[in-house]
Length: 163
Image (cartoon, rainbow, N blue to C red; front, side, top):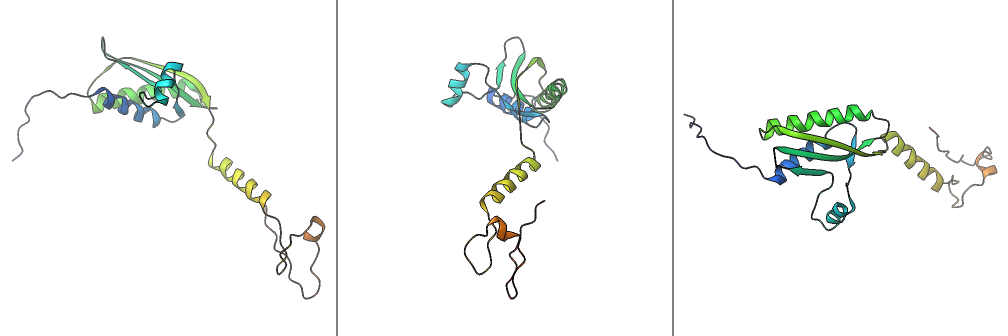
């Protein structure tokens, strides 16, 4: 038989609220990261006393200021609407609290390379460092030798396919 619930109080720490907000913002599409609003906060972050991008006050209700970077090419207003919705929903669902004020500051546009950009960079890096080598001989082929047909009894050098 299940026990009856007893009315009581639950206390949610400031850090728990910041973690919930951070998770909601980072899971929003189009956000590349957080930014620091001032040099003093950057310094506090550098020594490990502060996390960037979120300012939280509880005077007069829960008030949240977010400082984010948006992916280049994304509609900023749509990303901000999505962040607003995600943060309000997460806090309402997990903590049961309504936000009195949520302010989103977009401090910059960030570029995140796509998988295709990373693959191209890796391919360019490997193609610059590898040269065709004749089988059996340890010396690289010159430009003229790489495209010659093999003499009788020789094996043809393997060429790398370009994509």
